[in-house]
Amino acid sequence: MAKAIMIQGTMSNAGKSLLTAGLCRIFKEDGYTVAPFKSQNMALNSFITDEGLEMGRAQVMQAEAAGISPSVRMNPILLKPTNDMGSQVIVHGEVVGVMSAREYFRYKKQLWPEVQKAYNSLAKEYDIIVIEGAGSPAEINLKQEDFVNMGMAKIARSPVLLVGDIDRGGVFAHLVGTLELLEADERAMVKGLIINKFRGDQTILDPGVAMLEERTGVPVVGVAPYMDVQVEDEDSLTSRFEQPKEVGVIDFAVIRLPRISNFTDFNPLESIPGVSVRYVQRPQELKKPDMIFLPGTKNTMDDLLWMRQSGMEAAILKLAGAGTPVFGICGGYQMLGRTLSDPHHVEAGGTLRGMGLLPMDTVFDRQKTRTRVTGVLQALPGLLAALEGVPVEGYEIHMGESTPLETLTATARITDAVSHTSKLDGLSSQNVYGTYIHGFFDKEEVSAGIVKALGRAKGLDLSQIHSVDFATFKETQYDLLAKGLRAHLDMEKIYRILETGL
Image 1 (cartoon, rainbow, N blue to C red):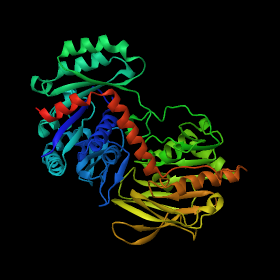
Image 2 (cartoon, helix red, strand yellow):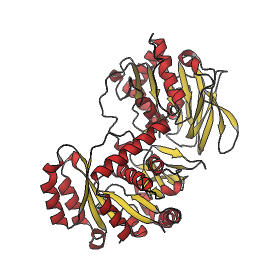
Image 3 (cartoon, helix red, strand yellow):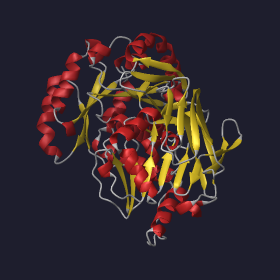
Image 4 (cartoon, one colour):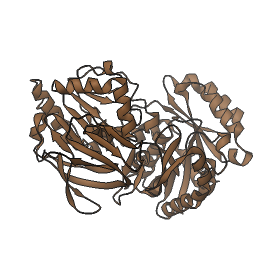
């Protein structure tokens, strides 16, 4: 069986996902086969595997860092919040149902065997498993039936590295307080502490580190810096929404919907020099973008109502009427149609008027579409006409089906990797484009092609603009992450902890 090491945090957003990815990359570079594991993830950024199963994107990112293909075994339970009180529960990549927090708490007992089965399956195939916890192990109200933090460490018999975030302040209190709230057997499992997201002169921190080790009896195995690496972060905790951005030569405005999902779709565009990707919540923040994106959402109908009530819909329609291109993905694509109907109460129920920018109706079904696709772009109208024949690939994950009401250009002709059938995807009319494909912009030909097309419309020669294939770009970022962590973590101590175990 694999040796295991677990990353737990004193709070959410302490940097567990990034450290897990970095360790996966380091172990891979050192010649080991390694896989990530997180028993339960709560996220709206999800991914479809080659088998057509759904998992959290954070574990996909970690699998990429480890140099392996993503598998739902790495994230056997995924919770996708549908509102403030309930979540869609996904087990081994399949939807089980929508449950309130109390209903799920009762249901958790049944999931212990599923978590153990997934972990043991991975442990038989790899040398090392890097396990990520969730939130904090000191959430005393959630300890019953816990299989995410210390409960998972016990299942895997894994030593724990406890991570605190110094950037948000109070890191010493967080680390000491978390250890104090653990049971004696749990505290004994914590073999190392990591101070994360440090900025400045580390020697100033040395007295505090010495006092921390003396107070807790647990060694500090590293002080990791705040690293500017472009890897996918967990959706609910991302800082990219808050980062102010100047308008670039080409300016994209992404509508920050209340239940936005899979905003990782736009990461490739952010990597292009001279391009700004701004996430906007209020109509006045729109300004005059070169293209507006309506992203995916876990609740299309409620988020469309939010746009209507906030004045965002009216602002978008005004810009679209003046010729600004609008591009909708998945739920954002559904919003562009004439009607959205929910006869089975998958979302809000009833029928809702759409934005009317594309002549189509969407009907929500109980069955979720989950598949990977490859294809080529069709003869698109408007500004993106030059992209005809450009290859595209990605995945679909949606509850609704959209039916065109007029004969218009589909956005792409695609082949379903699961059913091996060919079909048309999306709909485009004038400068309004829609698709169900997540990962649409990952290929350089697509992302750079859109930027160049928008440049031509502004009279700019962007022929020399260059992007990179996003998969290649991510590899460079994982290498940078590993290099940065090697310089600031005591890998000798970490290897000793890994080898010694519990």
